[in-house]
Image (cartoon, rainbow, N blue to C red; front, side):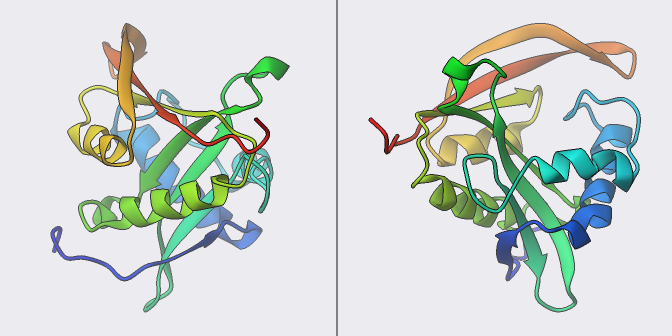
Amino acid sequence: MPSERTEVQVRPGVEGDLEALTDIYNHYVRETSITFDTAIFTPEERRPWLLSHPEDGPHRLMVAVAPDPQEILGYATSSAFRAKPAYATSVEVTIYLAPHATGRGVGTHLYRALFECLADEDLHRAYAGIAQPNEASVLLHERFGFRHVGTYREVGRKFGRYWDVAWYEKELQAVGV
């Protein structure tokens, strides 16, 4: 039932999660404009992505797991915003849920855990790009204090049409300042 709240455990992602995480992501590649990837991935192709999110530091991977049966319901990440050194105190955050896990509070659990982990990192801002329309994602980000800062119009083409991406930012408390 979509409105049913789900008990979840949130923990750092590990190598054994790779196949389930890849399956979740591939759903969005195949079925939605939420990601602008257009070809599905094998778990091996996604391994560098997983390894770029260690258990500590500013680039994290948090996984939501249902306790019974053990099932991955989704994940949230913080990744490098841009490659240049001056961007090091900024991260881009993303969240992907298994299709049957939406609307059940899983995203809230994931972001709460992610931002708690990031609280002790030397970070200043978090950014999120949300392909439009995606009201559920907009509401989730606003609930966590993100504010809209601009929209790239028709920036991506998928499924034979162009899509806008709205950009949101959230201030983080940098510990090194």
